[in-house]
Image (cartoon, rainbow over all chains, first blue to last red; front, side, top):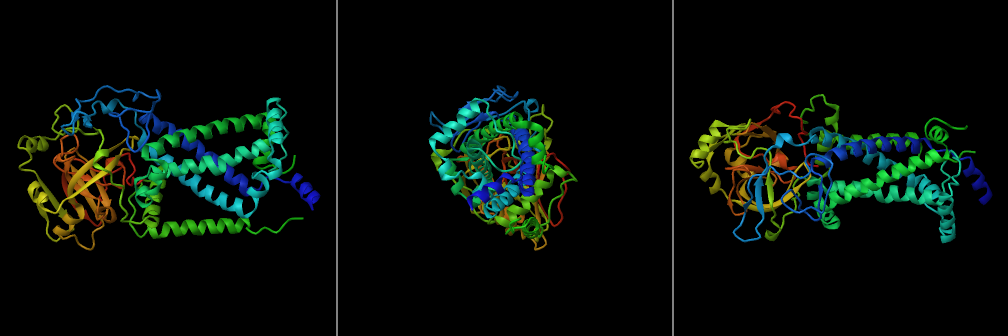
Length: 256
Length: 247
């Protein structure tokens, strides 16, 4: 039984639905990153909690656009009589701002639709076809410190296995894919939902769990950063193991 | 030998298409605003349809404690009486010089009793005060206390007709925008004349602004001039922004 399943898995090729989902999600992700950077450039400051604006202190300020540190504000007017009263101030010189959110947001959400719908179909198929169980989820006996150490060492020694053409993955590879599929992408989507006033009105617990709108925005940003680092590592590993062959297996190729 | 698949590709695609259809069809009972043939705005209309089909319509946006009120920038138009600005409005300047004593809000279109309301008349309706978060498309947020009358109260007072589909707002700084009736009759959708316990200031939209808590900030129009209730979508043209901004 065991030997037949190993010989079967050696002939395994990437399933068409896996390939299709992979490329739709890749394309959506690239659009999301591109428009996400554009959106970030409109207000390149991050905060924690519910509130954050140019009249409150930032957690982190990223110098990526001319909106970074603007100074042409009207005089600050306190709302209340107390000394530490929150203030209001009018913004001048709006025409000098960088703001392409008119199309940036629309493309971001259009791409998000493709990601969410494809991601849901992929998750369902992954669970019910046994794809996750068989290929993504590491076996308990695989998950030993010794095996893990050996896999890490081999990566540093640049002993990268040639492509198998199918879902026969190494231990670190499985762990990386698991993190992306079950943690990073869902977190990016959930924090994205938490920034929607209509969705949080229907599901107020999102704001409670994530810790507020601005916390969601900050987590969303760092999650996307993690996903971008994954993308770069993913491409590096593909190049190290044989770029052309990998690309063929993941698109039209059946056998080389 | 090929193992028999529990879920075939065809079945997966069919199910996917069917569930997508189920998502769209209920939403389409609502008339959709045009997307100007712009393929990039497709997603916005899809979001609108999905939100209307899947989210409970009258759920309330989160309300905050008084101590959570924060600083708040005033952006976009900050004074329609500023002659140096493109959005300068002579009629607004005239009304402002009189302390808005002559300001009136006409409610027209598909209403049984078209009426112009003075500020004092609007203040005589039962008021609602809410401490909510303003969420700007730029990415910043602020919490403030808003006082005003529910838009639904006004629409009923003017006698909104059954044919009505859209509530259109015209502003002194030259904007035209509309919302659907689900948003218009939402309990937190108010016409605010007070902010943080004082009269609404000029930078924040004096004398009257809309507060639409389940959409992004710029839908809460400032400097209201006129309200028109219509059956057809009154097209402001492509203003470069999505019409629905629940996300």
